[in-house]
Amino acid sequence: MLMIHQMAVVPARRRQGLGGSLVRASVDDAIGSGASIVALTFDDTERGLSRFYERLGFTCLAGAEISR
Image 1 (cartoon, rainbow, N blue to C red):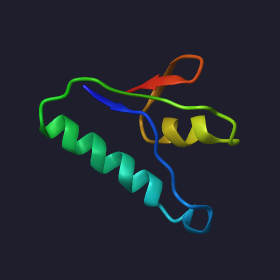
Image 2: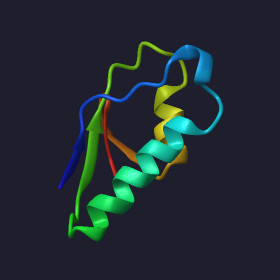
Image 3: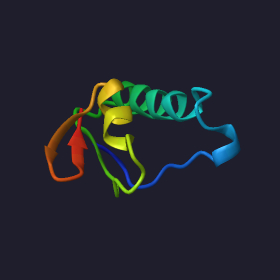
Image 4: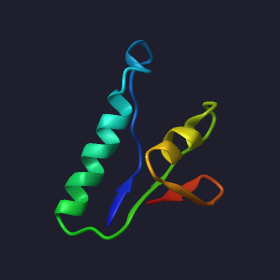
């Protein structure tokens, strides 16, 4: 299982694909190591954060917990 607790990209480097690349690399590495569950939690105080994770293939389970 991969559990992402916190990930951030400094504001000056956002919207350049870095966050998506970090998440995809982490997921690919975890799956390659045999993980069957990938989950994360986040505080959706930043508008659009849940949409960001949904675009990466995650599904909202309850509140701000989403899983892939």
